[in-house]
Image 1 (spheres, rainbow, N blue to C red):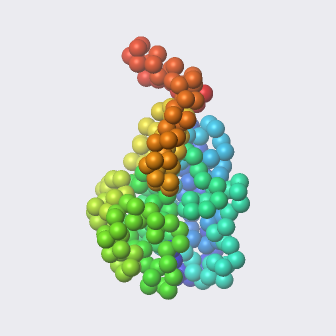
Image 2: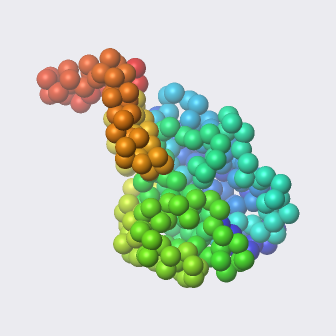
Image 3: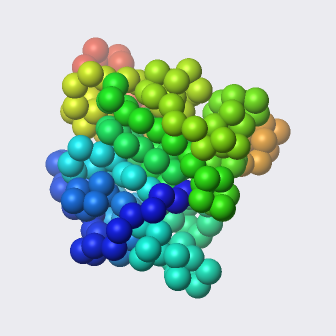
Length: 266
């Protein structure tokens, strides 16, 4: 989860609300959106705001400039790595989802250009990933003397399988968007702006029943983290509250009346 970058101005993320959708933009384009401690903290704050606002149903993480991210700003971060720069409080969302508070609502990542190390791990913690065909990926931590510590040792292997994952985790070699698709790391490749396609899919998710979306995510996350038996055992507990929701009634009525449902998250 690391690539060497020169120290520069403090990183941050942009925020934009479009109806029920939140757009979160990595905003340090002059340094290829390299993560410093400030951008890591601001990204956590933005995702926590998204999680805590009941009116928001989907978020898109994208990047300003030509590149998603060139990794971590090692010059700025190295002295802080052992002191907990990636430790988040129990009330804050960890953008990489490895510790602390986990999010319960969907996130889509839109990536272009360089997507190195921490960027791969950030997108692996998203639910959908739209990648432009010019993307270049690399999980190059072993070339920097450390290991991927933002989730790749688990999620890259889960997505691609052991042998295919180790091909890139143990070498740090670069690979392109078509290889990423073959490895099941991304959802789609687009020639045009990945952000436009991500917004299109996010708006589609926003039209679905939000409680049902969150329950579906929770069940799938249980399976990924704890295994099928645990997830199967919890299915009824996820289903019962939905059966008594207004949205479930609305779904049936909309079907009978042959109209688009209007879900309220209740």
